[in-house]
Length: 226
Image (cartoon, rainbow, N blue to C red):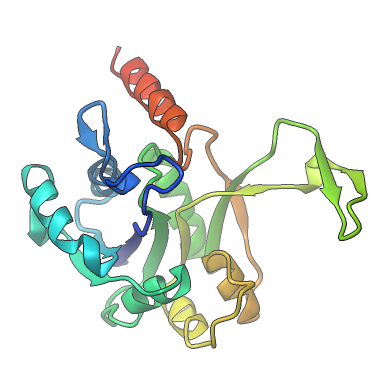
């Protein structure tokens, strides 16, 4: 069974107030995006990697990554105006021999090999697999009038990546017209008429958005090495 992963890295570092996009910032000396790619290579050395970047970031990435990731280990894809179009650009060039494909946030470098394997295994059996975790805090929902009510947190899941699908399903789903409700790949596939299968995620599989996230990630990496 031939596997692929589409790694989407379109961040601009706005929340951090940085000129350098967050996916290129180092964690324990290694660029975030390089760590992310390496985790999928650790899972399956033969996996096909499709790295999606904004056109304006391509030259910067190619120079930055020279010391970490050989260019023959991934396929570089130009991103679109929305995440949907970025993923679609990669989906549209997937070769026919790909059976299972995942889509992963480039700024989730702490995804474990075990969690990746769980998602690909379940997707092969069920058609798709989307990792999630339960929120540890109490949850309230706010309506359009500003009123808020308690929500059963056991009924709420926080969605992560990689979201993994049979390649033929994902290809067909991405032929749909774009709509604003498409917040991730699961929402695209669900709109296509597929039931989404949730699997256990990992609380450490955080999405890097702030400097606090970088500090936490470095702590976890240092702790793992001890």
